[in-house]
Image 1 (cartoon, one colour):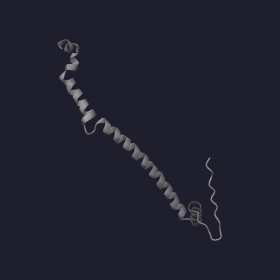
Image 2 (cartoon, helix red, strand yellow):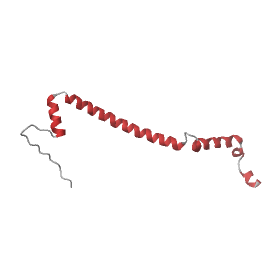
Image 3 (cartoon, rainbow, N blue to C red):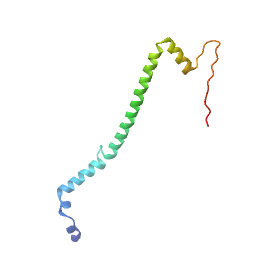
Length: 100
């Protein structure tokens, strides 16, 4: 057994090295802010940033629609195109492309 202990460099037997190794193990696996938790939080942050970008784009779209709704001609255009509304004695034909 002593032969094996003599083969290990003295640096690895140092008190400071052992303490540093224990601290790194603690921070990596056992702490509340371990590597796995940090990875999950980073992934969640990226997901939330994508959601934020989506909603910002959606807000801009709604603002444009709001401005368009203030003009009576645009209001009629939106009502006809989006909601298929029509005037009396008027027929609407909706063309749906065929799926191949």
